[in-house]
Length: 255
Image (cartoon, rainbow, N blue to C red; front, side, top):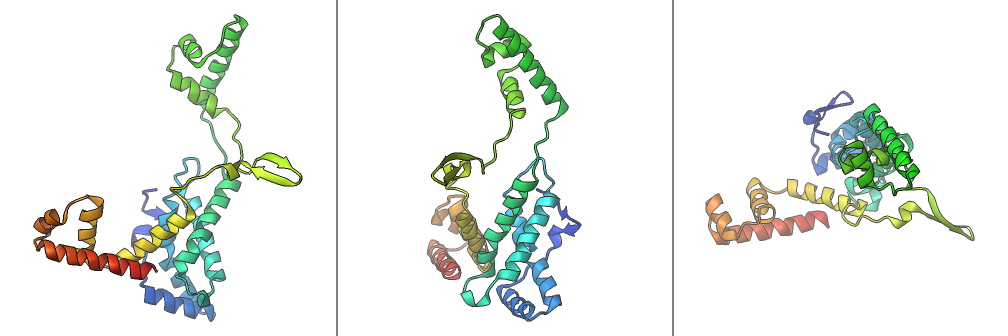
C-alpha cells in the first residue's frame, strides 16, 4: 500500500483540488464538459487512495483494488445530485468503499503456498496416525509428533480450511434468511466513521500551519497548553485561543 505508482498513476503527484474548484468542475461536468469531468476524476483520486489503504489484501494487487475504487468514484460522480446539499466526498465515500468490497467479494481467491500445503498434509497424516492408536489428536500432540511449533499446526489447518462466505445463510425460516455477515459487527470501522474521518481531514486542511501543529501536539502527542507554548514560542493564552478557534472552524466546516 506504500507504492507511489498505482495503475500507471504517480499517486505522489496527484493534484489537490480546493472546495471551490471541486464545486466549479462538478457544475461544468454535469453540463457535459468532458475536460472538467476528467480533471474532477483525477483531482479526487486522492480520496480513492485514502480509502484503498483501509483494505490491506495480500492476495490481490493494490492496482486492482485501486481500479475498483476508481469505478466507485466514477459511479458517484454520475449519480451525485448537486441539489442535495452535501459535499461530494460525503456522498462518494460509501460508494467507493462499496465498489471495493464488491470486487474483493467477487474476485478474491485464496492461494495457499506449496510449503503450507505440504505441512498441512503432514499434519493430517500425523492426526490419522495418532487416532489409529486410539489417542486424542490434540494440536499439542500433533506438534510433538512432527517436532514443530503448535502455531505451525494451527496455521496449516486453517490454510486448507474452506473459506466461508459472509453471504452464507446461517438461518432460514419462513422466507426470512439470516446471513453470516448479519451477525458480524465492527463498531470501529463503519462507513459512517470513515466518512467522518474524510470530512475531518478536509476541515483540517483549511487550518493554518500553526493551528494544525497545536492540535497535533495537543491531541496526538497529549501535551499540555503550557508545554505547547514553550515549544511553539507563544504564550499559553495564545495557545488556548488558537486551539479554541481551530476546533470551532473544524466544527463549522464539518457541519
